[in-house]
Image (cartoon, rainbow, N blue to C red; front, side, top):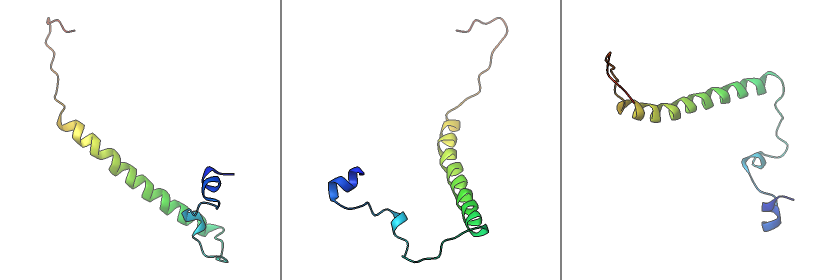
Length: 73
């Protein structure tokens, strides 16, 4: 029994349960196409989420120059 079910006495109504009863199940190329579309959307959102901190970090960076004979720690 899930913790939610124990607490509220019924199953959790997640988006998986929101489908209409009797709706046709997708099989074959349809499900592959939908899955590929979702993967594409997820990758685009990940790139957008990764680019924000990267852009902020790059604005604060500076080039480091070293000279011969100098001591660095």
